[in-house]
Amino acid sequence: MRHVTLSFVLRLIVLVILGAALVKEFAVTMQARSEAASIAAEASARTGTGSRTQRLRALKQSEADDIARLDKVAVTKTELVDVISQIESFGKSLGLGVTIASISGGTSSATGTPMTVKIAVDSTGTWASNLTLLHMLENLPYKASVDDAKLAQSDKGWRGNYTFALTVLNE
Image (cartoon, rainbow, N blue to C red; front, side, top):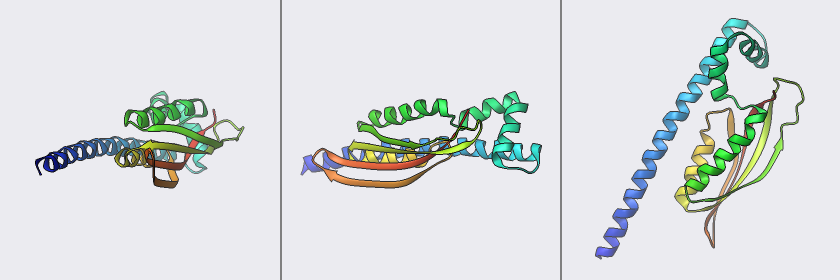
């Protein structure tokens, strides 16, 4: 009976720690998204009407401070490899076996044109770690959306298959 109670308490402690990490990650993500919305609003106010791409180009050409802020929340084609590496590293830090199954899209050749890149991620590990990775993918501080998420039990724990779309600027 004592072993069962100790096991329960340890699991509860792990869940509380994971919960605190998720709350912190959520706060950071919401701050980055808010900053991205603020930058887009400033660009719209400065350039008047026009497409989002035109407003971002005008912003990028006119203000050095805004460029530095924009670079923190926008992914360029050259930075895509770093973003993917960060996703893999985050998953591995959770104890997951993470692989990038495929990357597709992103074939626009015009400079400054936003394009959608679809990325498929496979992971193997615990239920909690897989959910934490999915939460991170859903809350990337970039324009991104999870298109598909599957979790299934396997002989190695839980297997996650996630597909998400990431908007990338072609520089």
